[in-house]
Length: 56
Image (cartoon, rainbow, N blue to C red):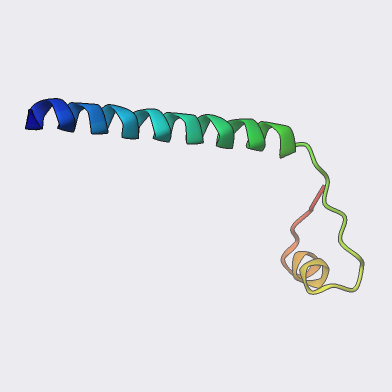
Protein backbone atom coordinates (compact mmCIF):
# COMPACT_ATOMS: atom_id res chain seq x y z
CA UNK A 1 0.00 0.00 0.00
CA UNK A 2 2.89 2.35 0.77
CA UNK A 3 4.42 1.66 -2.64
CA UNK A 4 1.14 2.44 -4.40
CA UNK A 5 0.60 5.70 -2.51
CA UNK A 6 4.25 6.71 -3.03
CA UNK A 7 3.96 5.99 -6.76
CA UNK A 8 0.72 7.98 -6.96
CA UNK A 9 2.13 10.98 -5.10
CA UNK A 10 5.35 10.99 -7.13
CA UNK A 11 3.36 10.78 -10.36
CA UNK A 12 1.13 13.63 -9.22
CA UNK A 13 4.19 15.69 -8.25
CA UNK A 14 5.86 15.02 -11.60
CA UNK A 15 2.69 16.03 -13.42
CA UNK A 16 2.44 19.26 -11.42
CA UNK A 17 6.09 20.05 -12.10
CA UNK A 18 5.65 19.30 -15.82
CA UNK A 19 2.63 21.61 -16.05
CA UNK A 20 4.38 24.45 -14.24
CA UNK A 21 7.44 24.17 -16.51
CA UNK A 22 5.15 24.16 -19.55
CA UNK A 23 3.49 27.37 -18.36
CA UNK A 24 6.89 28.92 -17.65
CA UNK A 25 8.19 28.10 -21.13
CA UNK A 26 5.06 29.55 -22.74
CA UNK A 27 5.43 32.73 -20.67
CA UNK A 28 9.11 33.06 -21.65
CA UNK A 29 8.29 32.49 -25.32
CA UNK A 30 5.58 35.15 -25.25
CA UNK A 31 7.77 37.73 -23.52
CA UNK A 32 11.20 37.14 -25.07
CA UNK A 33 10.72 39.67 -27.86
CA UNK A 34 9.59 42.53 -25.63
CA UNK A 35 11.80 45.57 -25.81
CA UNK A 36 12.55 47.37 -22.57
CA UNK A 37 12.98 51.11 -22.97
CA UNK A 38 14.71 52.78 -20.07
CA UNK A 39 14.46 56.53 -19.53
CA UNK A 40 17.85 58.09 -20.24
CA UNK A 41 18.54 59.18 -16.67
CA UNK A 42 17.94 55.97 -14.74
CA UNK A 43 20.49 53.93 -12.84
CA UNK A 44 20.21 51.06 -15.33
CA UNK A 45 20.86 53.35 -18.27
CA UNK A 46 23.98 54.80 -16.63
CA UNK A 47 25.08 51.28 -15.60
CA UNK A 48 24.73 49.98 -19.15
CA UNK A 49 26.58 52.97 -20.59
CA UNK A 50 29.38 52.59 -18.06
CA UNK A 51 29.83 48.87 -18.75
CA UNK A 52 29.27 49.03 -22.50
CA UNK A 53 26.12 46.91 -22.41
CA UNK A 54 23.72 47.44 -25.30
CA UNK A 55 20.06 46.89 -24.45
CA UNK A 56 17.90 46.45 -27.53
